[in-house]
Amino acid sequence: MKSLNYYKSLNYPVSLVKDGEGSYLAECPDLKGCISCAPTINEALGMIEDAKTAWIETAIESNIEVPEPKELQSYSGNFKLRIPKSLHKSLVITAREEGISMNQLCVYLLSRELEKRSFSK
Image (cartoon, rainbow, N blue to C red; front, side, top):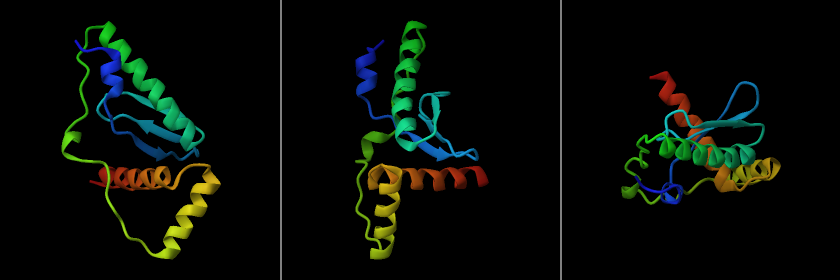
């Protein structure tokens, strides 16, 4: 079995959605049941890292196979997107209000929309 440091070095995708209570739910879909919840996006992203570490530690100690991220090797995680100036402005303002980067905000918004679509199927 590989070490904790090996698994922590892997780039597990994180799904981030806002629940009906106003909190943010973060999940590592490749690590079944690895979730956290926090009142802000930044806290949720920090807490999911702690949850991921605890999940992997527990799996290693229990001799349970730790899955590696699915099919991420074929994707860079980067893409260019041209958007209207007005949308860019709105994203910048919202990110500032939330105290996060525009990149984090866009990842959150895209994740939330994809999550909605997956539930509607």
